[in-house]
Amino acid sequence: MGKKISLVLAIVCTTFIFGQTKVNNYPLLNFSGTISPGKFTSQKSTAIHLNGFLEYTLDRKYSVRGDVYKFIQGAASSSNLVLPYQMNQIYLGAFRSFGQNNWRQYIGFQPGITVSRDLLSSYNKPQINPSFSLKVGSSFSFYKYFNFYLDLSFNKTQLRGIYSGPNNLNEFLLSGGLGFQIPRKIKKVPYSHWM
Image (cartoon, rainbow, N blue to C red; front, side, top):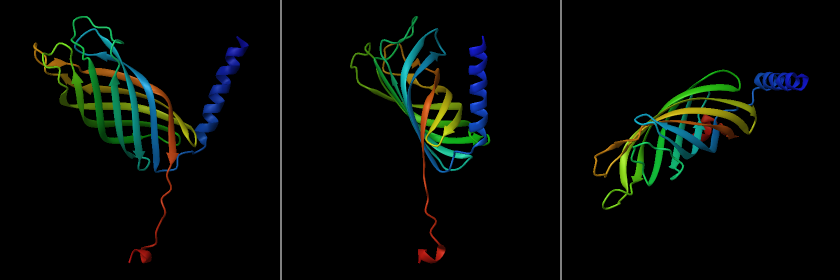
């Protein structure tokens, strides 16, 4: 019992110490890759995606972020939902951040495309469909080059090109883990040197 209390106190004290020290120098380049479990909204089905993102944080409030999702075939549980054989999703959008010091909460909208292919279709050609993603999340920078993050995304997309008509593949995805950040330095050029 004493070891558990000591571990909790160490985590709280470390978080407090790092939370007081400002480690974010804007602009930042953030990136990470993780495995994201998902839950489809139309059926009682789950799926797993490989997820990666690249984010350019302009200042404390605004950033531009791109996300990529790769559906892992065979790692899904499905009742009667027609799942794709291949599915890749690419999103790019703007984010608004809130928070102080090293703790940052954010919300964003990302339009994108979904490239999918289904085994049941007769011609088995990849289908390109418009989609979008709504994302909320939080990150905590604990060192100049590292952060922990947790995201919840709602991805709206469809699987088209099958006999039964478009199949709704809207899903909630959870991702999180260790993120990397690179502070960017911008040289300030005096106005007199512009001419």
